[in-house]
Amino acid sequence: MHRSGLTELEVVMAVVRRGSFRGAAQELGMSATAVSNAIAGLESRLDIRLFNRTTRSVALTDAGKRYAARIGPALQEIRLASEEIHSDTGEPAGTLRLNVPNNIGTLFLDQLLIDFMIRYPKMRVETVSEAKMIDIVAEGYDAGIRLEESVPQDMIAVPLTGEIRQLVTATPGYFAQHGIPETPDDLLQHQGIGMRMAHGGIYRWELARRGETYALAVPPRFATSDLFASIRAVKAGLGVGFLPELYIREELESGELVSVLNDWAQPFAGLRLYYPGHRHVPPGLRALVAMIRERGIIPG
Picture 1 (tube, helix red, strand yellow):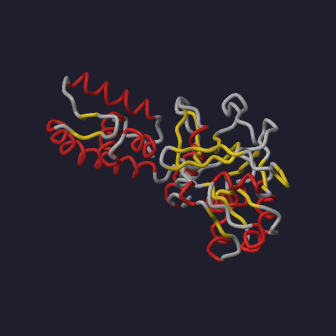
Picture 2 (cartoon, helix red, strand yellow):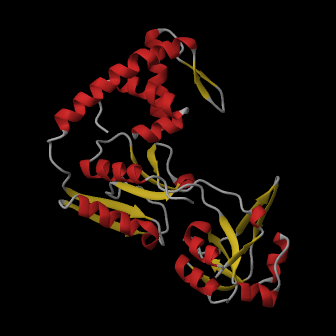
Picture 3 (cartoon, one colour):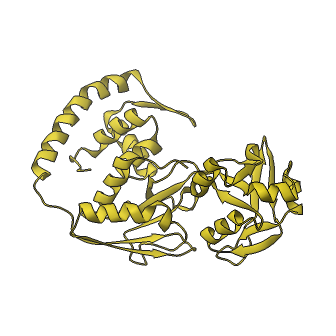
C-alpha cells in the first residue's frame, strides 16, 4: 500500500481493524515489533495510553476510542488522495527473485506466479527451491516462502495458507490388509512412508492430544525428500504416510485415501511469504503481496 507519511496513525487504525499487533503488521507489511514501537512512540508523544494490552488481546482505551474516531475519516481522505496521484505512475517492471521450499511449486505457487506475470507483463520471476533455510538478503532474493515457525522475527510475513495439519494417511486397501492403528504406538507396527530431511535424518511423526505428545520414528519402507513421491507411494498402497492435509484434500474427499488418529493431528501455522522490513520494497514485490491478499488465504 502507498504510505501517506502518517505511518503511526495508519498503525493505530490497523490495530483497531485487526485487533492485534500481529494482524496489523500483516495488513501493513510491517514487522510486529515495528507496529509495537510505532504505537509506543505515539503514546509517548501524546502522553496518553491508546490501547490496553494483555498477553491475549489489545483493546482501545476510552481516550483511544475518541482518538480513532477522529483520525479514521481523516486518514481515509488522505489515502484516497494518495491513490489518485499514484494511479498513473505505471505498472511494475523488472525481476522478482523468490526462494521457496522444495515441493511447493505444483501445489499453488506456479499458478499464482503465472497469473501474476499475465497481469504484469513487464515482470520476470525467478524461483529457486531448496530445503534448507538461507539468508535471503545475503543471497540476493527479494522474498522467501517458509512455514511461519521458520520465518525470522525481523521479517515481514504475509500469510499464504491457513493452519496446516499433518494426517496419518493410507489407502483403504492398506488399512484393510494391515489393520487400522488405534493409538500412536500402533504406528510402529506399520510400514511407513518417510520424509528425509535436509540434514539427512528421517522426519519423526509428531502427534499430540490433551498434553500427551509423541515423536514417532515409524519404520520407513520408503524414504524420500520429495513430498510428492511420498504421496504417490502412499496412494500406491505401499505404506502409511504422515502427510499435510493441504496436499491431499482431494484424495481424502474422494475416498482414495483415508486418515486416522485425526484427534492427534494438531494444526500449526502455515506458509508465509516473507521479506525484510528495513529495506525499500520493490514495486514488483508490492504487487505480488497485493495479489496474494486479494486472493485470500488458501485453506490449510
